[in-house]
Image (cartoon, rainbow, N blue to C red; front, top):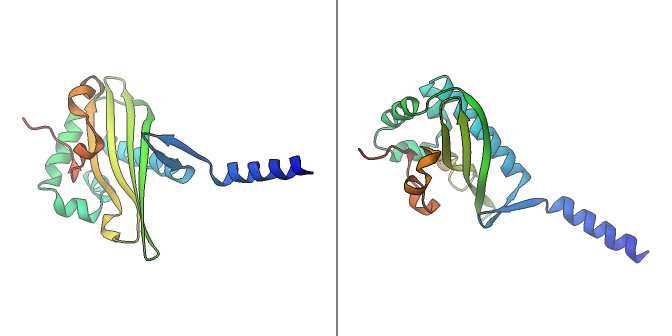
Length: 170
């Protein structure tokens, strides 16, 4: 009888606490689903060269803080070459803030995207939920680099927080 109770508790906990640890933070199944949905939306906007669709993915806060969003979109559409063959989540982490019953969830995701011409790495900061400040909801940061440039173009996520689309200085 005790073995059955212990087994039931373990099974219940495993269902309730299903999560993975990546880059130091728990990420729950809903967050993984949100990350997969977001990369599909980003890639569709890039493939269709749809500026309005890309802009719609970003939060009001990011759009208000970026100097020239259209310049970033133009850069990204020119930079990204080829037809997408595959993509995968390389790593992710999340942060959650709760205050007076309101919640903010920031998702940080690193993706690997392979086209028929190049291999890219994407870094995204996405506020998948923000009832504390609804203007934060949506993408805040999108950084796309060639995978071969990871050592020079990627760093700690805290150093890559910029509003809008990353464009290296010329």
